[in-house]
Length: 467
Image 1 (spheres, rainbow, N blue to C red):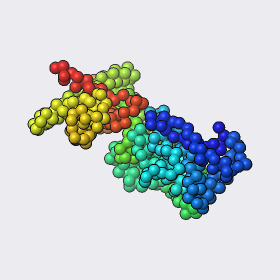
Image 2: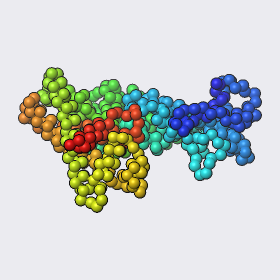
Image 3: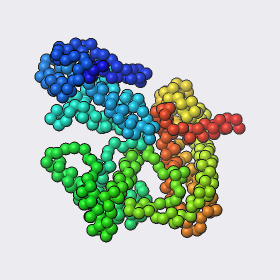
Image 4: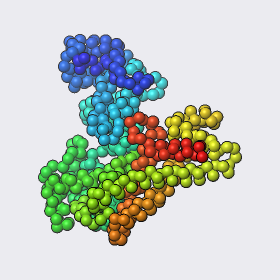
């Protein structure tokens, strides 16, 4: 298939969500009339082809406009597919999604010459908003893929936030940074001051030059700082701190700061991000961007044998504490519902099993229970509240048990230092489990991680039946 065929073949998904190629005969015939000298397998110059099609699209009769639009929409479908494949290549493996999960958000063109009703497919929205004076059609389409609201919400659920490190640093203010590092990352005052100094130096060099480019109407994406910019940033940091770093160290510090800001943004937008796991922690490290506290400040996980033993205990205890928290919170909910009219408690247990164990949709559960609508099931289950209550209860139980075990390894001072760190690490790990469970309930995707919350809940419900 030559490049020209992209203007009369459409990439779309069928009712089953599978990718398919659909030829549009009317578009093929029209293309042949306009570009009668080009063979199907010619290496087509897209810029020339699109300029002529766009001219016809904007300055022709209605019939010609519809045919021209259809050729351009076919071309856009191939670009949108490439955009999804690029996102999979960049993030899919680490964040557990494939391009097939992304296609439904952008490949919604039905191939008709005119839209049915008031609905406009994504590619038609792209075409209508395109300004040929600003960029090429392909570049504009790729940018719009990365700005797609629903696609971005899905990516956030997977832990992907599509803004470069340099753009994040550009639009973060030092005062805002202080609040984020203090309240979200629990940084010390000295670490916050280091981060603010680095950010101010970055703004004085990189952001200033970026703003100057924009004023000259030179627009481009935020690229990695040049060696000269990094050296200038290092000089400003030296002026404030008296410490000079090479450009390699400076860029590592900037990327680390951007990662911390990215994690916060994903969190506040309702997404999930890779939290630090106890399985990966061999020592409690400083939040400092410039240097890390030597590992000997934390005696708890110093020796490899002790680490292995401690992690075995922790993994086992995590499961036990989850089961205990589930039992306590579920029984509390049952007692509350038992005081209400009707058999609310039993309906709750049945709905919970159908939702979490049999993975039925709320609409199906409503039909099974004879309830008026799926929102009645949602109100009965209150899954978000259930997860929050289990999370809070589990944190208390797990932290107490882990601290008790830590007494076998740590001295008193080390335990004091560990207390706050444990709260952060354990809460992150519990939240990560809950977020995965919520994603599973919402999307039912096979590629997501196993739902530990649902698995333990189903075990508890089954045990409750047999007792």
